[in-house]
Structures are given as C-alpha cells and as structure tokens.
Amino acid sequence: MNYVVVDASVALKWALDDEDHVQQAVALRDAALREGRFRMLAPSLWAYEIANGLVVAARRGRIDAATGEAALRYILALGVRLVDPRPVDVYREAERWHLSAYDAAYLALARAVEGVVWTGDRRFYETVRSGTSLVRWIGEFA
Figure 1 (tube, rainbow, N blue to C red):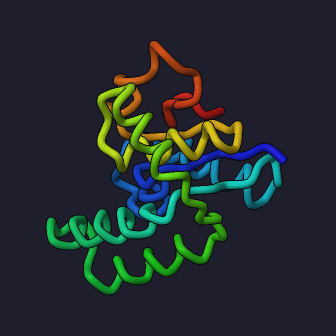
Figure 2: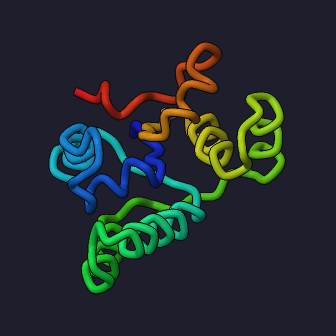
Figure 3: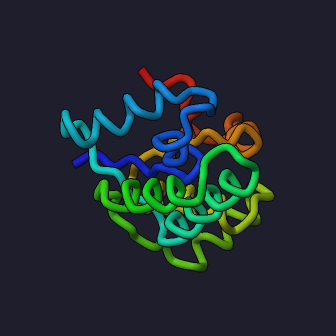
C-alpha cells in the first residue's frame, strides 16, 4: 500500500473553498477515497490543527461557526488514519530542517511509512524542498 501523509493545510482546503489549490486538494482526497490509489495518514495533531484552522476561519468571517463545526465533522469522518511518529524522530527532523515539531511530525511520519507529505504550507515546503523529495507542494498534484 502506498501512503500519503496529508497535512492540515491540505485538509482545510476540502472545506474552505476560498483557498488556493482547492481543486488539487480535492483531487488528492478523491484519489485516495474514490480511486484507492493510496492511503491517507496524518499525525494525531492534524485533528487539532484542522479544528484550529476552522475556528480561525469562523472568527475571520470566512465561514460561520455552524459551518465550521460541520466541516470539522466532515473532514474527521473521511477516514484519514491518525498515526503518530516516534517523538525522537520528530525531534530529529525538526533539528535537521529547522522546523517546528508540528511540521516535523508530518515529515517524520512520511519517512517512517516510506510515503510523501502533501502540503499547502509554502514555508514548510520551501524549507525542505531542496533537501528531500518527501514533501510535495499541493499545487503540483495532478
């Protein structure tokens, strides 16, 4: 089975249609769920990052609170499997790439399962892109 680690920035695009690269994020979701091309994974912090992203979107008036809660329920029901990498691996990735432990968790998980991370977080992507092919930019998903 091929594994794709999907970060919160990509998953939020499944609910926030005013984001960049929504079509690519939806295509990634559908490739996993409808076509079965790969299995989506994320570290457990993913759920809280999504909840936070939707709360912030509601506070900024992009969506209303009820829509935010419904979107959270929808995203969590999609079946992204939550798997936590080893904390020491997260630490090592954070140190190596000068990342937050949160971003490093996605990278450590991808490395552990021999998969890739798809991200919409430009800073995360730009930080690691010259040194690893494990992190991919969602705008390039075909």
